[in-house]
Structures are given as C-alpha cells and as structure tokens.
Image 1 (cartoon, rainbow, N blue to C red):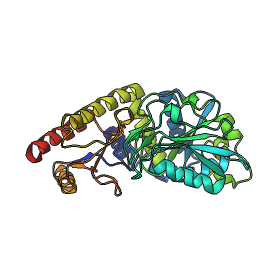
Image 2 (spheres, rainbow, N blue to C red):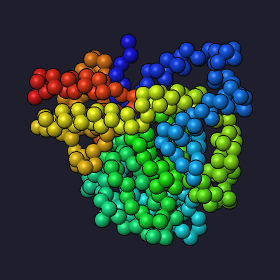
Image 3 (cartoon, rainbow, N blue to C red):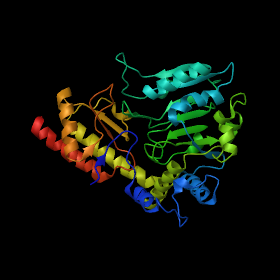
Image 4 (cartoon, rainbow, N blue to C red):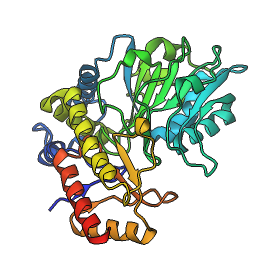
Length: 362
C-alpha cells in the first residue's frame, strides 16, 4: 500500500507517471531493453528527450526567445554556475535574501565575483517569515543580474508578485515551485529548478534560459560549465541523466493529460486553502509563523505547543499512512510539502488527522 508522501524532496511523483515507467521498464517501445539502457545518441532516447522539451514548452508557453536545458548538479551547482557564466570581472550581481537557499546562492556568487544583498527579511533569530516588499528592494540598475529564490522550502515563504527589477536580467531558482501555476517565462533571463519537487526524480535540473542571455555568458570557463555548451548541443553535450529525463517526460505528459498548468494551480490553491484553513481555525494550537501574504502553496510549516507534541504528531501521522511531515532539521516543527503530485484528497486526509489530533491533545 502506498503512503501519502509529504516529503520536501525528493518528493512524490504522480502515480500514472510511475505506472507508465513500471510498464515500460524492461522493454521500452518494443526495443527489447530498458530506456535506461539506451544510448543517449539513439533515436529511441532522443524521442523521449525531445518530447520532454516539447511538452514543457507547450505547458508553460515558453517563447521562441527561450530554450529548455537539462542539466546536472542540482540547484546547488547552479548557485556557482550562474555567476561563473553571467558575472563578469568588474560587475556586481544583486541577491534578494529570503532563506537558506538564497543565502547559499549569494555565498557562492561572492566566491566568483562581486555580489551584494539588495534586500533581506531575515529576523534577529535568523528566521524568515515573509518575502521583501517592492519598496524594500535596493537594486543596482547596473547589476549583471538580480537573483531571486521563488519559494523557500525551509521557512515556507513564497513570492506571489515577482519583483520589478527594471531592465536588469532576472534569474530565479524555482526548484520548489516550478510549474505550480502558469507564469510569464519571458519575464526571466534564466530559470533553474531541481526536478525532485514538482517535475520528476532527483538527478536532473531543468533550466529555461533566454537565448541572448546564454550567448553573453563568459567564454573563459571550462566548456562543461558554460550554459552555451549545453544549449548548442540540445543538452546532449555529454551523457545526460536519461532515466530522470524520461521520468520528467512522464510527469509532463501526465500534467498535460489532467488539464495543464492551469488545472495544477487550481488544485494547488485548493490544497493550500484547506491546510491553512485548518491552521487558522486552530491558531491557538497550530502556530503558522509565515505572514499571510507570503505563505507558500508548496511548503506549509507550523509548530504545535511543544516539541514533544510535534514528535507525537509526526509519529501518529506515519501510523495513519502519512510520511515526510517532520520539519527541517534546524527548524523543528512540522512541514507539509504539498507539491503537484500531492492530491486534494491527500490534503483532506491530513486536515482530518489534524482535527482529530487537536480534539485529543488540544
């Protein structure tokens, strides 16, 4: 029996995408071998690769000005690779600080060149409970780029209005909320997202990059680290993580089949309203620290009256078939990650459990 998976990542995948992989695992399209055994240069795998790109382009309405890339190294590698490509000597990049991952991206950029904090909402105890307002941004109009982390898995905050950065290229780490709703891709010069939240398994990172922005990338770094190298070779410069991309294809095909990204947004908002509704209803028992206008629809964080009750909640939820609810190791409390593959009924089950837990322990 499958459990309800609220893990923050690697996260759950839609069951139809997994079932398709199961059915094709040993014999892919009558080829007599698994997709993971095929050459990345062969027509069988190439069809999967190009279909994944085509599906993502269709689902997000990616314009001709942009290109989809499949990369490795996760978001953590992009923290360094972005400034390696786009932060030339003598220039500076602006970073908007909203949590642990934006901090890590900033620290990597400082090793490559000049980086500055253009906004931060960190509290004295080092927590973040909201994203910056537009009037709090102190942007450099001559910056090489502005970097933003769209959703914060640890603190449970999310940008619901993109910052206005003028004519400066906007770079976004969307690892934990990419494709949660429709978006205007043209607003961004470079988007990167680890697949293991909303798009597929760990091992592959998806980027959507403006072609002219890639072209201006530095040429004095090793070829393997140049985004232009991967763009010129359709993400096939070296052997890509073929099985992970295959599974992304399956997830994207599922997303199209259920009604596209607009339908995913409808479900995600319904899930968020259900869960935050339960937290607000029992605000004396469940403490949700994030300010309302910054609440994440992907990672919902809260605490119970005592750490002991937190532990009891997690343990009893596991007995009830729900896993992955323990908060981040430095934060404690509870974290429910309700990515695209988590269903509305899954969240209803969690809310019912929360109601019963309050009745017994409140």
